[in-house]
Structures are given as C-alpha cells and as structure tokens.
Image (cartoon, rainbow, N blue to C red; front, side, top):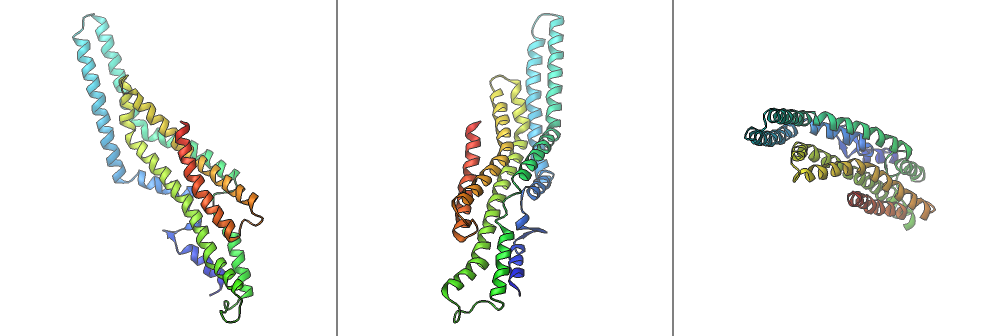
Length: 274
C-alpha cells in the first residue's frame, strides 16, 4: 500500500460515525450537542427542573396571595393580587420559552464563532496537508520502505518520524481542541438544565444572586469558544515565530504542549474575568 494512502487511512481509522477525526470541530460537536439536547434523557431532566421551578414559583405566589388576602386595604388588595398573578404568569412563560431563547442565543453566538473561525483561517488541523505532502516525498524516496541494512540511521529516523510520530501528534492536536469543545457544550447543557430554578430565584431578593450567577456562567460559556480560538491562534503564531520550520518534530511537539497549556489557561481566565 502506498504511503499517502496509509497516512490518509491512519486519519480515517479514528472515525466518529462518518466523521473523520481530522474534521472533528465545532460544526460536528454542535451536531452532537443538538442530538443530546433533544434526547429523552435531556428532556426528562429538563422537565424535572422545570416542574420544580413551577412548583417554587407557585409556592411563592400562594404565600404572597394569602398575605394580601389577610391584609386590609380594599381595592389595593385586589390590585396586589392581580400584580402577583401577572408576575406568576410571566414566570411560567419565561420558563417555557427558555429552550427557544437559549437556542436563539446559541445561533447568534454560533454565527459570531464561525466568523472568528473564518478569520483565523479555520480550526486546528495539525498541518494535515503538510504531513501528507511529506509522506508523498517519502514514497518517492522509499517506494518499498526503508531498509535497516542499507539506509542510514538518520534516514530511518526521518521515515519513522514522518509516517508515525508526526501524524500521531497532529491527531493529538485535533483531539485536544475537540475535547475542549465537548467540555464547553456539556457546560451549556448543564446551564440549560438549571435555568428554570435560576429564573425562579429572581422572585425573592435573597435568592436573586443565584440567577445573576447563572447569567454570568452563561456569558462565560459563550466566550469559551472565542477564547479557545484565540489561544490556538496564539500558539500557532508563537511556534511560527520561534521555529524556522514549524512542521519539524520539535515544532509540532512545541505546538501540542503550548496548545494544551493555553487552551486550559484560556478557560480558567475567562472564569476569572467574570
């Protein structure tokens, strides 16, 4: 089998359904998120938290309604009850509209994220095109593969490095980015689950801080993907600046470990900023 075919099959050996790992990015992670979001497990869990949120808001409404009924004041009592009723109805509507609202926000931020991805010339891919070109050059040099008896040790090392080591590092870079994306979308799903309770917390001054904490976490969640893209761009630029050839073994190793650090650090810093 020719080496370029070997390398291409090497990438396609790690498939998720029909998605090659080399294409495992935000588009496909978003599809996974949508599948999980509409799964029966997610709907049941969201239904449970929504029911609990409705129960809490109903309890608050009944408690305040009784307080109004026991108070004197004539028409003012009924006005207070009507105000409570509209507040209660608004709370129920906001709980029911939550999935649509978050989907709308995700659509808007998704468009912004795609513009950012286009601006930085795509997502991390581990220089796959360059690696395939290198294997094609190896195929021309060693049609039947190198020989441990006739080829020098540097030639054997170069062959092993290009065919096995660098493709594995390229896969690791792509996996690293995809794993951070998966963590971000899991974060979003959990925020959606607790939303009904967070919204109901606005009904009482002592618990309203829970909602604002939830809102802060939602903003952090939407900022994570741009933060990951900036971290990735920073790592690529740093490697290109430091190394004359960023596609050497040491260059790809530096890229992997720098991205591992910066992607993790980007998530931590976004949390600290808000």
